[in-house]
Length: 607
Picture 1 (tube, helix red, strand yellow):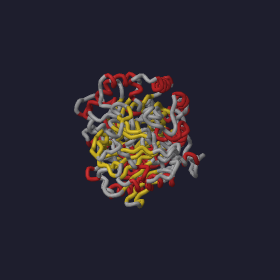
Picture 2: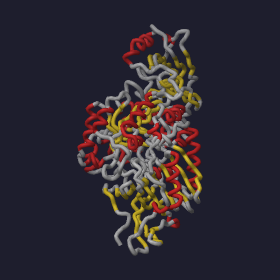
Picture 3: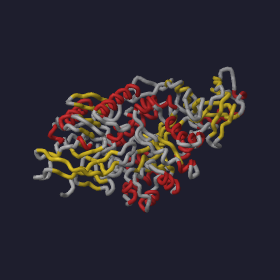
């Protein structure tokens, strides 16, 4: 059901439906709907700029691309004079999670369209962990309503690491096989359970087989620095791409195995600069390299951009602008089998394009999607329809009881005055953590955090089934000072509730507050709430506009800083502390997880 919005344009017709008219327009027998003249057309097939070329659009697709489109004109044809500006293909994000923007698909689309993103390949595995296949379907259905192209990858791993976490729902091979028949499903989402693939887990291989049998693309996720036999076994298991590389050697290893190296620049992941040298310095064929964002929160989208930000960054890292554009357009389309449908300004393709005065600065002046103007000078010009999300999708935080400070106490071994505890070490701007240890003091039988040495408490609060369970541990790297706590129901990937704090009272207050509002992020200091971002949809997303959510998120960032945190994009680090498929140490509802061994581990070391 649509919520107070309707599509402003008719749905895009297939090439087969439009071919007669496209041919007629290109031949001059019929008139185009739109002609853009005096443009510098960027051809990503040939990697050249065609100065003064013109394009003619009909039925939302390019009909003619050449030096002179005058034969495509009639009195009612809309004519745009590009005045020598560059006309480039609409930008494609090859791997991303809409939920990471804390926005629904409609509001995410409204946020990124003015930045020139016209195609997104999204993996809704966040909501899959909360609502299962139904959640994927809701994301898929709202995505299908948008005026730009949002393709859905069927999540592969919920849970991401069976036996190491408990999710709200699970995804099965049968779910994957069913989803492959949905119209907007483009492939399988990132195969996060890479140990399962390496060891030939029948469930993981069945999901991959179902995807390949449907002739669709299998997404990869190999979050390990080991490029030996395990990596080769993973490549043999079928993933066609990978975005978890962090250095040049990772990028080279992937493309040598026939995979696409997806280099990401998200809100907290800065993995382009360290990998793009495989192209800029080693001279590898750039066709196997793709740019993506992975995770971008609303503040980044509103203030910094989306794929235009990634392209600018790649250029600043020394990449040729035309190659960087290929990595954000045609390379992505080709990877997903859509080269004849999008990713370039060429006949028959969807008329997704951007007018910009500079290929390096990439100011986005006008954005067209399917031949229609969708944004101009940073403002969206079309509606982005919403689904009417069901009540049970807005009521997903079940704590089971009112939490108290005692729920966050960590009992010491009998008689101990000090303990050596394992500590999750946050690494700025990267997804991996470090497995640290620290000697901590015991007071009245309870192990205490160590503010002087930047060791706070962390807790994983079960929120799907209302068990009231709390798993406690320690974390270092945030720099928090004084009595404080931050809680979030965005807790990749199981999406329970992560609470980090220096005060057990504030940790309980923060957790209970999110139970009251149905999910989100809150920061408490000295017993009072100083920031709140409500995320009522699955405890992951808001259906408010991106600017509203970004303002609340900025207040949250400032609140974290007021509590002593100096990390860049610290909230993204916070939200990944339960991601039990990325080394080295994580926390789950089942305990502390050693991700180098993929096994649960004790919090305290033997004396």
